[in-house]
Length: 138
View 1 (cartoon, rainbow, N blue to C red):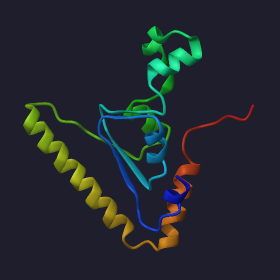
View 2 (cartoon, rainbow, N blue to C red):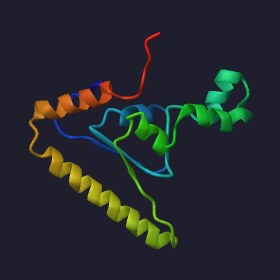
View 3 (tube, rainbow, N blue to C red):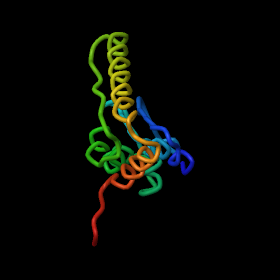
């Protein structure tokens, strides 16, 4: 992840299903993280979280709520930059619309970042990472 953070090109990550474990950590280093609205993204499964926290994997639903792993939760926490809507309808038709939306988002990000210097790209990534989540001084 350190090497990835130092790359001088924009990194775009898109969560399309379930992003979890070490791979989820690496996605967080991207300049822009997009997520399909029905995808989930976390460093641990709800079952694993429940097993560690309560020694009871049957509390996975409760764990999932606490983990804030939905696209909306992660957008609100500034972990992801954009939610890509998933249209309803016939599977093939919906897939084609999603693919078109993903292509549009990638094109927009490339346009936004192509005028940035290499140092600005790395700094943008650093600032994004520093501003993720929320914390409270106690």
